[in-house]
Image (tube, rainbow, N blue to C red):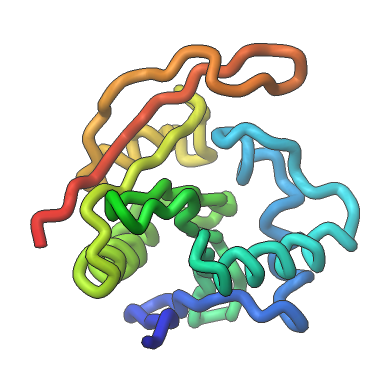
Length: 181
């Protein structure tokens, strides 16, 4: 089963532990890429190596999968999109993304349908859910919720006090995409 894909402008590929550390660090060292999750950006150049090992182990144990979105024109990684908390009995999973400032709705409209089709058609996932902080602005003035809505996700509600981050309780908005395959 091939987990790597291509679109007209992007490579959608599993990360390679030995070679993708620098690109992952460049993506995840910016607060704007991770603020909607919420979590702290990477601050030490050794962090990506540990993260790449962790996601490789989680992939091997069928717990998660993460793809790097690499622009063909300059081979720059502009996003990481992943699934985690895969429930193989209920056929659902949680989506997570970290987007560079260069990743916009147009790029997501090209890339995400390829991933969701694979998840729903080949892996038989019935429900894809994303949980995120509300109203985190993107550099283009949009929000992550706006992107999700444009991509066909439906708002389901808000989970109050789901995380504690920087001494504050964090509410998470829930968006989902249900398979029609």
